[in-house]
Image 1 (cartoon, rainbow, N blue to C red):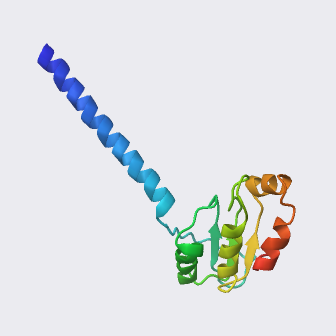
Image 2 (spheres, one colour):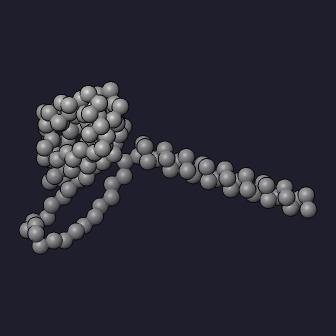
Image 3 (tube, rainbow, N blue to C red):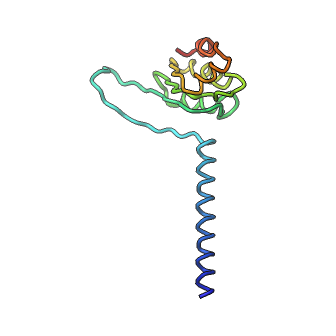
Length: 141
């Protein structure tokens, strides 16, 4: 009886360790590894093939200095348009430099369109009303 309990406890501990390790690696990868997912859609509304790159929710995170690694990965996709889907900074960010440096790098690749996320809106409400102007000056519409 005691051996069965020890075996179950040991098995439970090993399983718990495996789950925690897997979760930790998954979280690490989501913060530090770039993943490209490709989707193909057909529509009669567009007469030519277009390649769009959509990025979102960096929350101030950088992939390489000035997001150079991210910009390089985007350039490899040879996009016609780059869509930035908001939350590139946090509402309590010190400044908008992570977002504007990325935009500056990306607008040399293709036209960049920036949609504000809830964090950008709160950031502006928290004393940074010139964010839209800085996004525009960096090269995004």
